[in-house]
Image 1 (cartoon, rainbow, N blue to C red):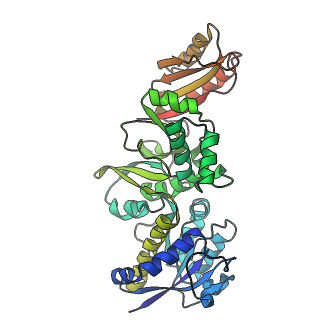
Image 2: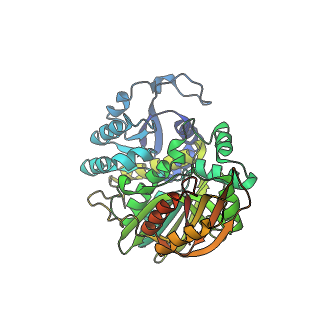
Image 3: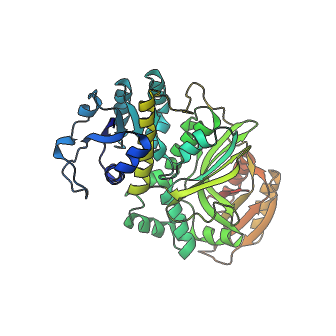
Length: 429
């Protein structure tokens, strides 16, 4: 049986899971692939730490060049996550005639135009299933399973950390700070969780999903991004009473004005397919002209699920090698930038929380400002809970334009009776 040699750069959690997977399922993989996947060398700065699995010391090195410059290695797996070196590793591998598998969504989102172009120029492929959704095979679903469809919308809960935090806040009424502390103790959140909480991680993944789905490169800098830092336990209670769940959503929609791409906290109805996706689970809702509505759910991170996705990419890359066709079918095209809808062009309903002084006439002033912006109020909740004379005024609006809402909220925040910036959460109908 033919042997396909692999070089692994980055032997952390996912790399360890991959080594375990390839060892445990070697026979099954060989039968399905028609060849044997062999780890020829592993490079990592730390090659002495106990990872719970034994490998021959002869294949371990601290020098990734021994992988990149080895003509006998067919596939390079890049799992370092190092923003400074990983891109150069991938470029070297492609120029050396090797197929590349990576889980590095930040690198691909920020430098994908360079990397995917290099793959085309060198007639090689970059496989990145593990970069979005952990063990959910969403990349292959969009690239192959839905290839006959015009995809009209993608809604994704694609960050397990924020989904865990919002789920815990909803379940037990705890604060965001308390839920984050739990997530860190459980290993679901980094010591510095800003990429997750600020929505940047989700935006990285949205670049890849929308570039695949909508047929052009999505510029990360042009995606509207908001995080969950301002969501309070009170917002969870109020919105739950209104029949909604708060989720951090990555949204991609085809409109007549172009692709509408954004990441932000979103209210979704309790009846929506995504509303019951809790904890560290990810889920991606995809709608196509002929496929209609579909949802794909699973664990979005962790040693096992992510290693599963890397393993699937290895098998696909191996099949390309065996066939002599190194091009990835349905790959991301970087020749043209995706036409994006102007920011602020969308219309939706909004939930607004305004911390205002508890005195007569305040609600009338707020309503007047909203009315002057052609924003109509659907319902009002004026809580009896006061802190130092300040009470939250909760509004649900009918559909309103983004720009009109932004201007109105700016004017409302300037009222002397309003003590801090209003919170706005969009509603996804």
